Length: 90
Image 1 (cartoon, rainbow, N blue to C red):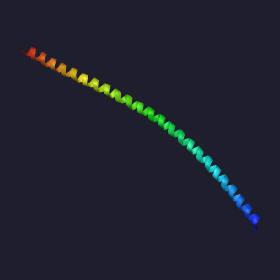
Image 2 (image 1 turned 120 degrees about the horizontal axis):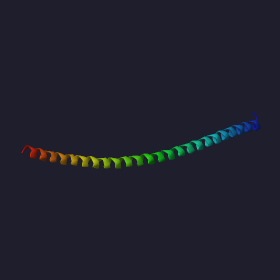
Image 3 (image 1 turned 90 degrees about the vertical axis):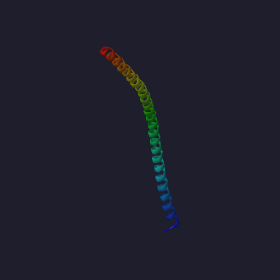
Image 4 (image 1 turned 135 degrees about the vertical axis):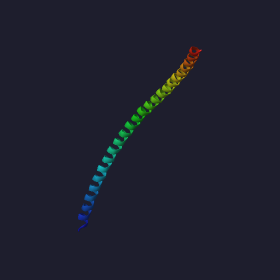
């Protein structure tokens, strides 16, 4: 094989390698963009979930207060019923 033929062979191989590297760069760029989009969507979704959890925690606090208030009122009614029963029994 002559030197000229050998150089052409190497040049063709280098062109092929350059083309494959270019394709890989394009593919990697697309993957990075896709990952960036997914990350932003996950961050947005996390914000929504966090807000929902916070709202639910606040609702639970209100419900705990309501339950405590109802329990106190029931205790007060129990005391009143006992007083009435005692008064009626006498």
